[in-house]
Image (cartoon, rainbow, N blue to C red; front, side, top):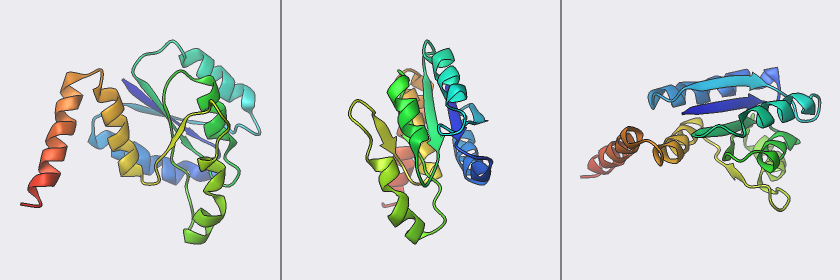
Length: 149
């Protein structure tokens, strides 16, 4: 089980680190790679092709502004792709969210804006193939519900 975080730019490193830390709370292994779909698409394609035979893998793409990365990965990967774009503020989100949300047909990108929610989504997806991880998810849900008692 693994999560591959693809950063569209070195400037996304801090956001990627938040995702890595959130994944670690679930004991999910992750690997971070910098590869722009616009500037080095060959690197993105090679990564996806190399991993298309892998089971129990989720991609998390981190790209803002003109988010070609999420779509390129999703259109070529057999694994799920979760986009977690880094926005500087609410204005940046309002202007740039559409490049992540509006993908072409047959390009299934899931969008999650919070790094901890990305980790929880990865745990649920990967938990489908791992009973121990699924129990962790169930326990976390119970813990949250118990806080409302």
